[in-house]
Image (cartoon, rainbow over all chains, first blue to last red; front, side):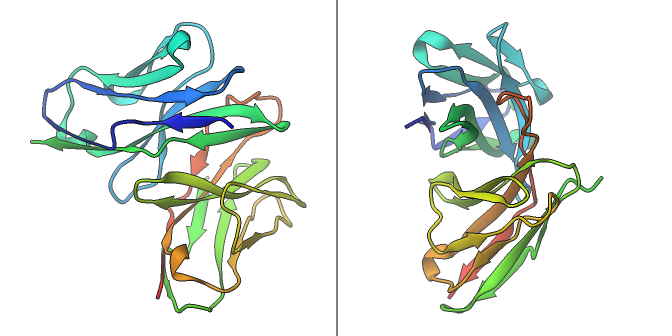
Length: 115
Length: 116
């Protein structure tokens, strides 16, 4: 069965530090990859997505992610985090299973940025 | 355009009580789904629907029922609440036809449920 792994459950950084959150998936076919963000007390919203083409995708608020097919990875990066980036980040795969596209989410990474 | 709306925002139930969590979307999305979010477990799919009259089970369907009589609404019913159902519930919707998996999923604001 397809799955998504986020190995960092909690990350604490100081402002201006660089961020990289890991995401690995297991699925042999074509995948569509997403990162969603959930700010405290809010619902999930899309940060960025990858379908095909340039494996480096840019999203909102200075985030980017790189798709490395050989490693089944889609890591999220930001060169310099801000206090307002404190949130929970979810990696997700949308792939065809039993005839229907289904979203599978990772367990999430809680990021706390210290001012 | 309100997007995905959920009611109530917060609910406390006693074990054995029943309730319905409401979800509605005004984007004419074919696909709707319910997730529960628990610490350390991310979002787990409870039930989903690919259109009016069509529903199917997700990863964790036990204890929950759904129906989809219209495109807009997708209520989630707890027939006999248990403490293990204490969670935050998110409804989501997205387009289905022709997108081949590229569709962004839109989430509601969530319902916090506490079962005593």
